[in-house]
Image (cartoon, rainbow, N blue to C red; front, side):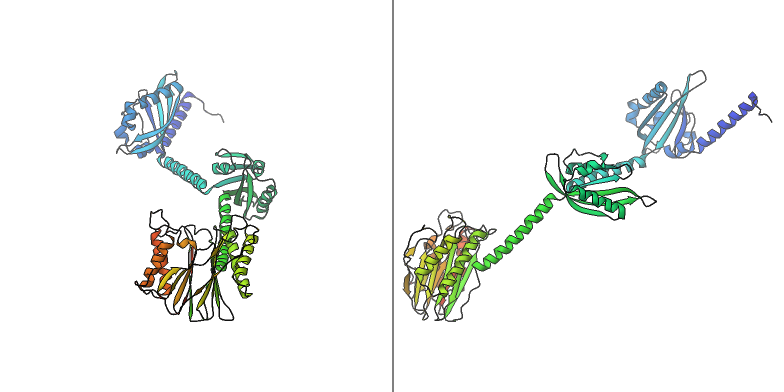
Length: 532
């Protein structure tokens, strides 16, 4: 059997093929496919063109294709240049906004192909338009999300990587590059390059963790040191998982690395601060215990306020002991400076004082012993201390006062208020290898009296807010006299003095203040007429 190859048969075959192609083009709905003549007028129209551009064949046939362009593009000659390019190069490919019949816009991918006849003369153009508005928006959203992810990674100092197991290639995110001290960009390099960025001692650990995850299918994680090109060491927390193919073989390893250097340093500092705070609390309890007396005929009250350096541990201290014979001994003191070292000296002085008092040593031995303890315990020769020691007799009628560089107590007795006038010695730690005869003075008191001992923070602040004048002993005397004139209790006296000093200093004391007050249970009220 022979095939008919006559011109008539060939012509019929070509006509049938052309008809089938026409039907195919007309039925396509995802693309606008139509013909233009040499001048750009629409010569054909398919279903896709009607769907995308909203024009029917009756609307658009014979119209110029430039009506699909925005007015500014028409004025700029964009349609004409597209045809010129297609005629010159055989094809034009481009993207841009196009206008539908109702005036709405869509973003199009356009291809214009030049059509030539058998004599190689330009016959017209075939134009294919695809509406890629949704695709373009999806790409825009993807870019935004990638940018947001990159920004989030930068903020969190979190970089990502993906290891193609078969190719042994690791793709780095820009932030991962930044973490390792490299140019921030996305790039791919052999896995060995990735591993080599870690500290030489940590590389085996990194490799072992990833291999273990690849073998068992589990996730991996850990903290390892990375070394930047300039030698700086950063601590990274890495997490990742293995992605397997349909056969269960490790295909990819996906992971993240977060720079936790500052975080871990902050945690370390916080732990140190917590330990320091706990030490401070223990030292503070060793400096400022809660004091009370069993004898109801004698009152003992204390107060403490930190100065504006309250973040540092103060070194004011006080203590009291009741002795077997009924006598009461008290101590108040102040070590220069702030901090654990100074506070530790204060704790040592308080412990030494208790031992000396319980051993029934007198004023000379007590001050001499305290001086020796300070010199042997202080971390610097610049540290010294002041103390005020009292011994109240069992009958509460006699008080012995011994001072070492400390401000004199304020005595309210027999309707009078005045500073105790006894000989005082130098501050502890001032004298170097010198024998010094410490002195003490005895006070004879009446039935109702109060003795106020304090550290210098009470009088060394300002006289008034903004003033350069010290509060001083005179102002303290006036304030105490005024409070006692109002029949203030011992607690009222202490709280009132602190209120006065705080107000004078704008509620911000320049130094710590400790107060210890010993008084008979008969309150020592003071009349205006008797005050001096």
